[in-house]
Image (cartoon, rainbow, N blue to C red; front, top):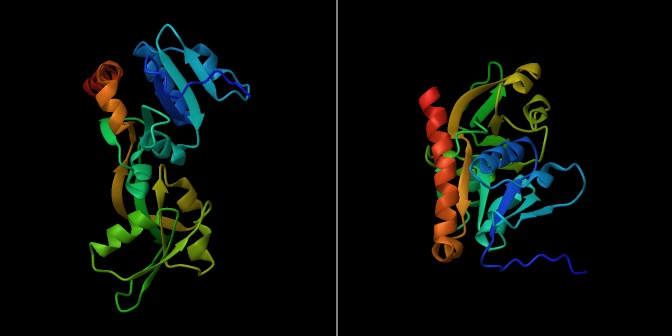
Length: 223
């Protein structure tokens, strides 16, 4: 089936947006920067959107997949959380902290938890690379149990001692009798670029970058 999509078109910037609220916030910034595409917010199932006048092509992808699209050149630029970049370590350029989608990667456990350094710590997480890197820096032996979603239940059922997960408000933790004990890293959304695209579409990427950087600077100045 011919979709009319040409992934190698040199006069368009291909932008991978994470599905969900974060992607909508990113798009609002891009539209303000001069890259609007109103049909992008249409609730239909279409995934690829173009604005020939702005020379931009957007597509929605799963947040954790954004780095793969950018690294492999299907997208010239994209936006991904710092957690995703740390976990998958893609070979891309990280251009800008957009100062949105803020949260933190934390170690959390049941109230009253006390770590016993004489035995291996059991850790439930969706981010094994981040967890191993964090505890390796402490020379701490861990046993990682990789889970996807609702990992707060792991310590409650005795599957693990702690969890390593993203914390926004901490409400879910509190409701399940857990609390964050340590912050591993602060998380926010980052603008990333394909390394080849950054060379051959540098002027276009730089213009988009400047439009976003100006908004970030204005927001920081107002805080």
